Amino acid sequence: MLQCRGYTGVRMDSASYTKLQRAAQDFESGRLPEAEAACRDLLRLHPDAFDVLHLLALVRRKLGDVAEAEALLRRCLVLAPASAAARANLGNLLADAGRLPEARQAYEQALALDSGFRQARLGLARLLNRVAEHGAAESEARWLVDRDANDAEAWSALAAACRGLGEPARAASAYRQALRIRPHYGVARHNLAALLAEGGRSEEALAAVDAAAACGIDGPGIDFTRAGILMSLYRFDEAEQVLVTSIAGAPRVLATQRLLARLRFMQGADAFERDFSSAVERFPDDRGLRIGYAQLLRGAGRPGEAAAALERGLQRDGTDPRLLAEQAAVRQESGDFAGALRSAETAIRLAPGNPGLEEMRVDALVALGRAAEALPAIERLRRRNPANQWYIALEATAARLLGDPRYRRLYDYDRFVRCYELAAPAGWPGIGAFQQELARVLRDRHRFRAQPLDQSIRSGTQTPRSLLGDPAPVIRAFLEALTGPLEEYRCAIGAAADHPFTARNTGPARLSGCWSVLLQRGGHHVNHVHPEGWISSAYYVEVPAGAADEQARAGWLKLGEPRFAVPGAPAERYVQPVPGRLVLFPSYMWHGTTPLTSGEGRLAVAFDAVPESRLPA
Image (cartoon, rainbow, N blue to C red; front, side, top):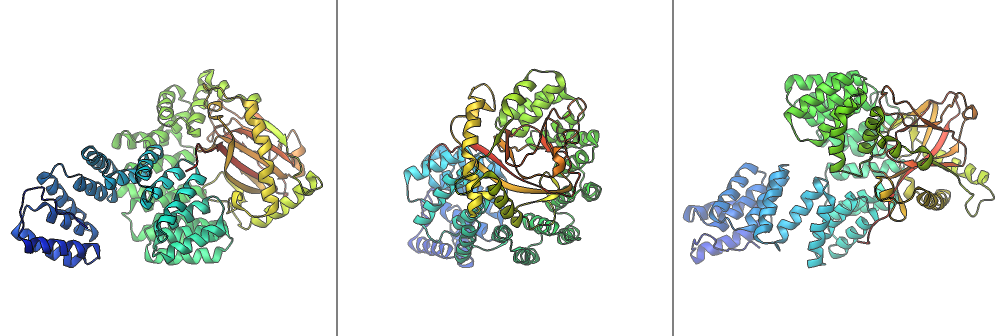
């Protein structure tokens, strides 16, 4: 219930006070027109009544009138600058409007006035999660749950922080705690469903998303989650229908448009982008939608069409840095590195201080071989995010071109690239029998006809579900069999604190993602790194006979060559694929494969491992 605090010294008669209390009750019950009418009547009698203005601001926000709600809240703050509640509500309003720096300032000002004000601290925790400052978000949410262990919203914010920190077990525990406190907390159930889906626990995820819907959660967000889960369960037709229905009601939602196009592409549909294209034509000024469409075409190997779509957007507004950033990416993909640099630098002039734009500029400089210019900017990016594996890869490439000894220290192939031969898990008479069953089960999971649009695969398929949650006994046995080699690898690389790879070797590693790839004739991986990983891998299940030719090296793993060809930086190390062989290497090492030359497929499993969670939630 809204409190009448009398900040401005305005005294109300008992009838006015009663009317305000009734208006607050109407607001809490969702009777917004009644609450608004009462507030406006009261303001005619008491134009400077803080509590009336505050309540009207909340009503107008609920009704979608951001401008008037903001004006009313700012008037409240003129009348009562020490109101933590008004500052927190202003923060909520600004956060909803996407004005995140201003929202953060409002929350911090509220907490400076009242450090224990829950609404402001919860809003700040949620905002920090939105801007990927998950460590700071965790601290704010932990403060709230330590103060009140029955605060379901704080537990949910803590879960989001743990999820962002790459700690799914802690995140799931925190979401479940929120749901024990508030069983009908639909947002927490939906977020738990998405978390379970990320971990491949598709059956549990589907039950969780159904429960969220039963709690009243609806709209494109839950449609996206449900469709993704159905895809992981190989229920492709149902997933497509969910997305088609969702897009019919909300055609401008980028996530659902992208997922529908991706699903159709992997199923081999000719006009996979048709709904997306129609939406861009229907809403030509929606820049986010246009950029997403260009990204889709770029991922599908159609950079010319992507460039044309962006050019039409730039003709409407040539000063949007987001359009220019995607233009830089398209030009980079097309090999026009000088053009990519021009686009990135133009975008930076329009939006200085944007890390994403600086990434585009650095990528173009490295591809052009201008390492001396790139290295200082890379070092700045690395200071901002030391564990980002792509930044380390860029630093290594720049150092390589400059003859800087940092390169050999980072790309120490003899020390950091190691091969292991997996032993047959218990229950299988030998590794051959195990490999045969693993191949059969994995092939059954390759039901798409084409590669994902956002991965390194060319002419191949990837399993739609993370193998981490796959219930098949042979897959569970495979995952368990990785424990020994991973531990042996950790012991072999050491734990020197002055190296970005070994400094993270502080305890057991856990798998953060695991998938299978089936390459066909001509299939290969373009060179890439795994930005959020630590240890990456390749495990070979089935290998074509041609891989035995040490001269042709068809389907071999290659290391050291950047994503875009850089003079003076060819591949330096090749690893032959052999059935039963596991290769482990740092996630920041550029890696790809040479194309297959025969019709026999190459079936492999890959995973990333990261340092284990710190503490239970």
